[in-house]
Image (cartoon, rainbow, N blue to C red; front, side, top):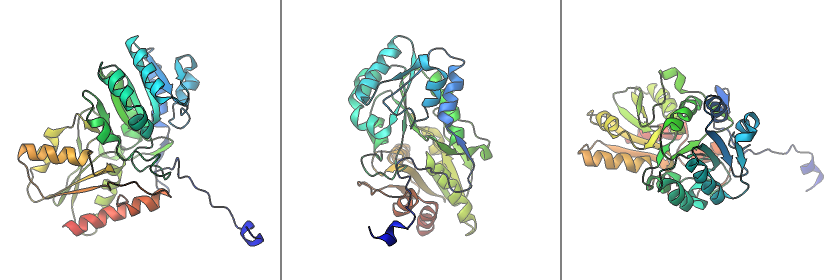
Length: 332
């Protein structure tokens, strides 16, 4: 490096734990950690467990509030899932956190055999779902829904924002059986409070209606879909947004009823690969019901994605607000 280069300011990157909030967007800090602390104040059976990632999954707040109910298992995700199953057998309700790639790829067999097969009451909350980190394929869980949808009896939740997470925590704790929840951590956007919304496990909710396009979405792409609806209003394109925070069991009745309405393009939008996620689940549900609207999908490609800054990657792979709006315009 020459002297000229050494005088330049160093560029900072937040590719690993990058915020999905736009500049100036309303956020809440650590909604998962705070909701779990509140829940634990009412329920002595709640315990927290992590594999050396409490700080990066907001579980450190629980560890600080209830150190005697927190278990740090070290960098051993398979041990983490096995121990969580044992805790559930003793009557506790473990909330287990790690990164989604580690749960889906590294600990899958333990989740399948130790937890799901015995229908144990373990709640697995995993950060960095889909394309919410710029650290490349080793940390981008773009196939986690496809992997876990095939596990019998496993409930799958993909929340949109802080409101969704705060509602999901007590709901999945009250549900009897294993749950996998995609987790947004840190400063999480607040979006759904503007839509008279309340999380209900297993239920899809129509956030806004529209005559031209129906977007069926989950996770952060519900937030994007709402932004797209506002953007397309300027082109006199009326967009409805149906939010599906529960991927399994899917609220097929609500989806089919919404898709039956004639004259609307149906678009499924998800922060996941085109393979095996919400898009394919919705398509199968519509086909079984004999409902055949014009259908398109906004999702990540069936590929190993690049590393880089999240805004750049979201634009490159078609899940930014601008790219989503452009895609819908081209389909009408």
